[in-house]
Image 1 (tube, one colour):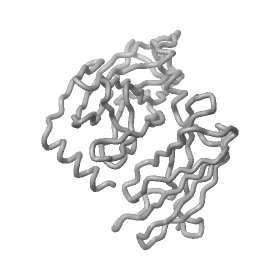
Image 2 (cartoon, rainbow, N blue to C red):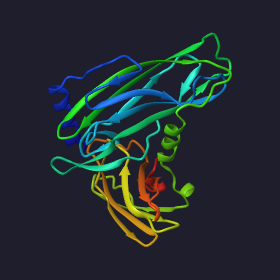
Image 3 (cartoon, rainbow, N blue to C red):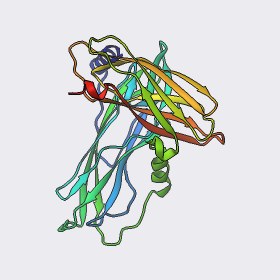
Length: 288
């Protein structure tokens, strides 16, 4: 619930101070944050991947795009010189955890890489190093929650012959990103419509897998105009039905006509998978 989450975060920020650091890496008591790239240098006309690697101490976690019923979404933003353009930060599939008071949270334990694709202009010239700034904000929680932030600075060389770097890290990151359902050979369909009077709409996501899935979980994206219930997930053979309720909050208008949802599951051999499904909130005739 947004009001519970916002009240908790406000209280935490009032009670606790936020430490700040300017460096390649911030070393904290609960979380470290480090700028990383998949190349040793940037080349004009090419694209590389730039990210912030967060490492959490055992039993501590930070939060996903939608933190769940309580928490604060982790944020990463890059400040780049003219001639470089960063795409959106791409989020690996999260996990679910129960917090004190049986409060559901979505996020990451152990470590997570939040990264974006960066395009270097063809005519980029005049510098041997590219100054990069990454501004990060997070809330780390265990039995208590501690907010943190870091303003990280880094210089990436410019070269016509860059080499790949951090290959294992970025390969794992790519594999952890949710893909469209059809790319994973999953048939997805949805039913339901959001009432305009603020009452609950009943929604169902039906997924047909190539093989019987295991440990199916869902993660709705954050939308401050909606109240979204936790889902009931039913799996029978190679089919999963995910049922949930959603309603429009009083005084709000829809931020989007679709609710993006991430669904995670395991293949029969245990391999983890994650897919994206867009759930239409209104029929086409209702959209103006």
